[in-house]
Length: 222
Image (tube, rainbow, N blue to C red; front, side):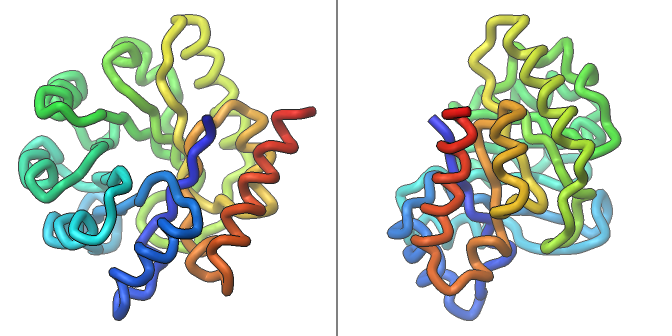
């Protein structure tokens, strides 16, 4: 099953609860939360308090993407806030397998994230420990960036590695996902599609999500 995960980084924070309820009603599968610390990436966004607030207004899985240094120090905070899935960057973890294990020990699903320039073989020895791999299709740090075309081949390579190891690991893609890019991303083997401005910047969230799903479905039929 292919999943749509609206990123609340692009939502209207003056009415965040309403925005989340709206995308849930529109058919979203996950709620994606981008956490930035101003060190690992050049921006500061949200933390556990926002995750806790999101949890109070939705039963959907909350997908917490930690774009932060020393993520192992904050996993407990996000677990207690109500996260369902937590992903950490390969580039930010000195001991990636240990950090993944910390997430898994809480009962949550754990993901490993690759920046655009980080090769997929960085995950070779931890791939069977993670529930999903998040491939960045923009350089992290800001919303509304353009999709990096080379990401498509990277997704294919990741899919081949997962299939060769006979794993059920999901591939999530984040950055520049919209009507123009989602077909290629789906065709390359992605399972979860993070869309921020494409959804929250549209007038009708339901129609937008339906349109994205149709593009995925049409690609699968080819």
